[in-house]
Image 1 (spheres, rainbow, N blue to C red):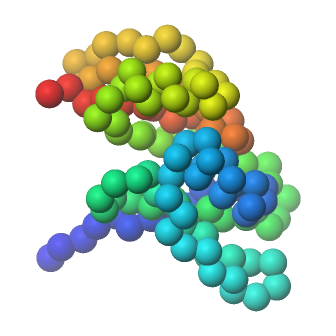
Image 2: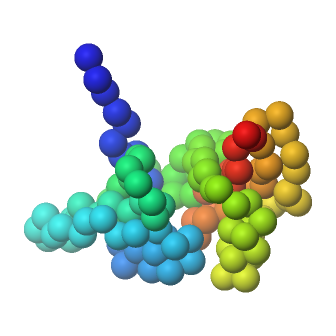
Length: 130
């Protein structure tokens, strides 16, 4: 049996705001934006490059969902963005206003720094060790 993790859902306040951030600031590609009626859309973004898992931008529609925007993992890092050039991407993201919670550091698994997205979700920017 072959399986892949196709997408993960990320709660957002507004579709267009989220699309603008993930494509304009993080440089992701907009893979799909399909209107499903009323105020619901199927919106997927993913880092540029071949294959991989996409993020389904899911507009919060209840008070319980809205309360979890930016804190879906209880404050822990829950998203991991791999890069082939940490210094380049760290520099570009910083110039675009991305907030890094820490200085870059070397770990056995690679060079890493935690940053926040538009909503405060914690991400690792990682250049995996060779």
